[in-house]
Length: 224
Image 1 (cartoon, rainbow, N blue to C red):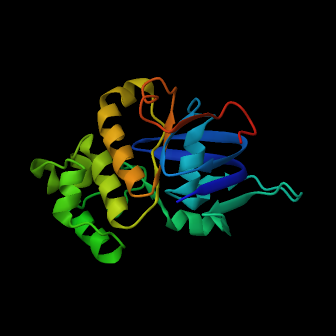
Image 2: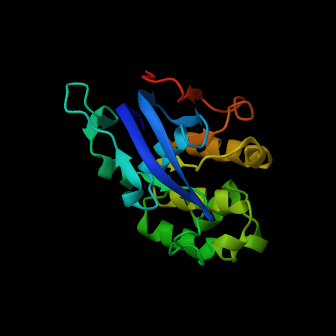
């Protein structure tokens, strides 16, 4: 899949676990091909607003800046113009949050994957997904919020099973990112092979530059 964001600028009230932050993204344009992308910036000015807007927990938290001139906001998937609402049907939020507990919060990985496989377009079986993402038997039957760092891989597997193509992380500090780099690299490899896109908002890209396909510094406007 090829995704193009044109003249995209957004403010978002981003929620993750027990906290919420306001984040904004400067006006930029970019074409994403299958792969993993580091969206670099601080928590209040960077990639979290982008990933949160594409896979929002709550649409009321999002304000998209729109222009009436010829350089208007546009979205393309495989060179076809699409709406933001359509784009969100392809997107998947990674991890879990507790400000507003989702329906998946108390469901096990096994139940979530089985449901996603049944309702989605996945070509993979439950056992194949379990093996691909290295899901342990110990945590496979636990509620999502009791799976520790494995929740990242579980939610990625659920998204893949549901046929999603855009996978959106919340913003990660260097300290939070360090123990996750191996798992994220494996997730990026799986998503890339499935023709998908992984968006990874980070404090800086030093820890992921070895496996991401591009580093996008959102402190610089009008990226092309």
